Length: 202
Length: 202
DNA sequence: TCCTAACCGGAACGAGCGCCCCGATTATAT
DNA sequence: ATATAATCGGGGCGCTCGTTCCGGTTAGGA
Image (cartoon, rainbow over all chains, first blue to last red; front, side, top):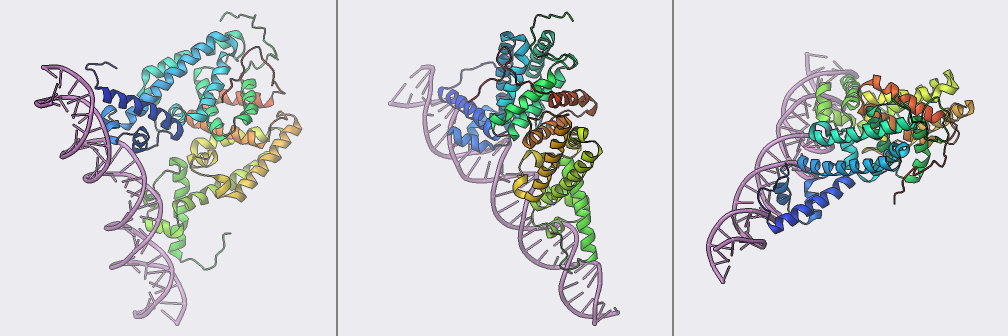
């Protein structure tokens, strides 16, 4: 897909990178609804230049979301290897915090004016794959109740991002996160401190 | 507030009622972003007629939200008297379900392009009051952990509505609701888990 | 029935925004 | 340095939407 059939002129390459960088920040701050002119202005170029590199506003937004998703997936992988039992929680709450600063990603995720699975099927599939892994991992470690699937986790992410955006103060979320955490923990087990030595075979 | 300083002409009164009714349904279906022309068309009147009764689109939306809030408050009161311990849960999940069919209320609640406290201070205050009551009642009954306040509950409502809207199938929420419920009930677990927990952000 | 003030509808205005066009500019090979 | 083709920028087109305006219509009292 991203093939360089012909080298880009130096100034063109510079402008393209600049537009991407600025769009990155602007979509995060303002959401997908921000005018292209605003992005062009911030990047110090004309609107025409933006449209030369990205045929539509939608395609620019997609490029940004795809990149963000790649970062998110990578982070999820790291989180999973660090601590299998905690990986899901760490990732979940980090996604929520990211929702506070990245409106574009939040919208893409919640499906507000953007169909993630339709627009970026590969990225979406990869994301789902990683989520499946770290969820299964946590369930194997016994830190998450077994009757939940990936769709439930995605739903929770959407909810958490909405909450985080609603409540500007990160400090206050410290009371909400434990609630979610407690709810996700195994229902019957009084749990407390999981020794993680109980390796159940599925 | 709703004073009749002068009797409205019969056709005018009929049109006003019709516009309100249609706006009610349309805002619920399409959200606050729906064009006034669409509401006028559905009501079978001209756009001018809508503007004669409501000076701005915003004022029409406010009128609708105020009415919905009144219903919500009333329902909360009923729920509280039926079963003190269950009242909060019943109300919470009912609000979530309502979010599936009433986009306008969801947006107003989440503060998307609408400042509830600023636009309808009285209604907002009354809502907060009721929420405070049924939360305290549930906490007294021992069904909800005591370290939560109204702001936390409001945050959860916003999150639940976002989740419910994300997940079109009501059936599937049957797995998410118990998670929230379990989290709210858990005595407490602000523990210091083995590792990580919540990552720090700026 | 007739008169008049209230009311109606939809054309029209202005602002915002996605996207395109084209004369001016500039990178780069020769 | 010069030619040439790629690139630039911003004005403009077309559309949507909130709001206003006004000539035609109608309710309802005399």
